[in-house]
Image (cartoon, rainbow, N blue to C red; front, side, top):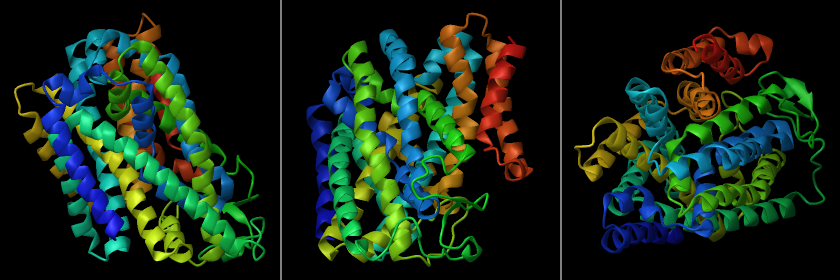
Length: 458
């Protein structure tokens, strides 16, 4: 508990110091004056990628399916690799502020406005999911009610973001990344020590609600058995995650703001590649944590979808001493906060630069953060919220972005129709239960249809 409250105090201090010492202009607030080098940029980008889905969600998926859940973060590595050689250097060379700004330059004012609204909606949905995850962790850490915990976490993120802007966000991101990596390493060590010589990862205990699957790892949505170390055990869900992560990091303002804050094009590119090297071991460590949780605590109630959201938190409470457990939960809150501040600053930047420039940036940040907080309280479904964000926002913008860079025939009409229809197609695929019947993740037809629409309406 002491570590946690000290950390919160540290964030407040970072926000206030940056507000007083670093923020001299709007560029300083939004993009840290475009002064960042490789070290701070790659650390901040890595921390931004690691959120509630890639920690609680991925560990929860590993609780059932084994090591294949590592793909939640491995897919992000694929997205960042593509980003490093395409959009990141292209946008940084233009010295832009936002993704919708590029859409406006390429397709016109209407495309810019539509992209802006989709971006803000997507970022606020994403932010709400992160706030809810923090609320769950704070509930475990402090025993305060989840809704109150959400409000507390949201208040803190909003405060240091609106005070210190990009400088505070990027400095705190790197601090949060260090805390999380140390905590995750301790959890893996203590977890392996707990099961050493007593259990085998190849034959786990029965999972509650899936007793008929026996002592096996399995895909809970398709109810198909897999092997513990089958890296492709999640089947087409892996492709869905790759699509989600790739489109996510191409279109998310929170990611773009990291490479747009770098001092030059080369730094933007190298920062993306350095982030991949940091994410690779973290991906497998998070999956291992979920597998260990299954062995030690096999009777957790099944969650909706493919994730057991309590797996990581339960393992922390089971195997770590109180002080270390509190430190790791504080670190988990910290790393999710790094994603929150990125999304909040991104939404504020888009609104200010692409919709209505005559607004106080700090008041705007407060209002948008309050909307996301309300969403976290009203819609507490983590993985589903993240996937719907990808369908509504990321898929709709991805094809117009990538084709806008490399295909001269891409038109304003095709971009507008794609942004509207692709998310609807993906949504219908899930709502009509075609996904469940076919085993094909709903983001796959959404992405394919987006490129088809771009070509048809060229």
